[in-house]
Picture 1: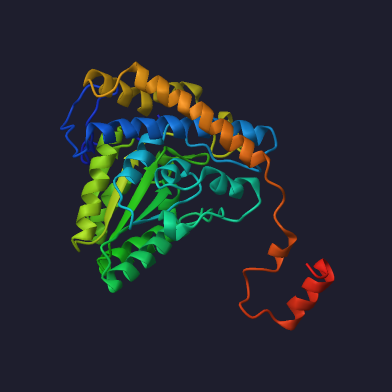
Picture 2 (picture 1 turned 30 degrees about the vertical axis):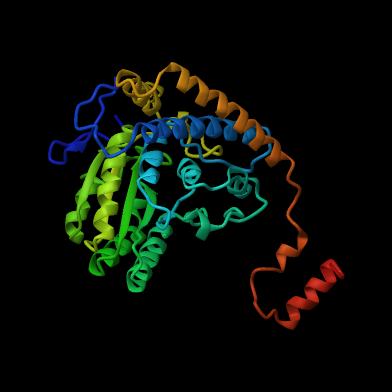
Length: 354
């Protein structure tokens, strides 16, 4: 199997079995309303993810990286953060962005090619711009966390990255810097089994979480399809960071059901039987069964979330496709505070008095 596998030397934190029955302590400090909110976020995120796939196929988005199957990993971790914390995403964290309050249309302008990184406010949302270069967001997060520590802020940074990014030098540089300076940072790996077409087993011989010991920080493996376990692991890392106890490394074992991006054909390197095995571990179905069994939510609540998702996605689509091209002035803006004469001359030649 090319997907993440368990290792007896490194136990995996889990609260819910695949059928939704508790296998660990499910008291994670959330109210019933907050527990229902996790399901709502996951349902909204999956519906938007599928719509984005359709939008790309219809020519409305340039390229899109789907995250179906990873909803629990993103929603559970993002929900554990506070408003003053900062997220540093890669390019697959749309679900986490939604939880952080990022406007979906603004976010998707990056994938539409009308604004690099998306025109939302990173400071107001606590969600940094989309980062495509693999693993560079880890260094950004550690730098932000060091600044927060020096400023005496009660805040932490969380950087999302994949198993492929863990093979980049930036990962090791960020982990070492974070540990040496004991910064309030959380390195959150969504180990979805594949770095494009390279399986996890061809990338590393031991769990990614095991690397934490070498840097002198805690490392935990968590079932990334168990939203409660993800929330618990992240919340503990957040509390540790804010207490001045330094960084943590979390490895969430999950799976991407779809392709790496819409430019990828996973059938060339992945067995469909493997995909079906992971479909049976669906994070939304698992959590929904738990909530219904615990009497926290019923089928009517889930149906209402699905109806809300349909209406919301329809509005997102309409607003997105109505966007015109970016203003031509942006070619010359946002680079120099005091533009040189050569640039001003080029601007005048290209745009006239605009």
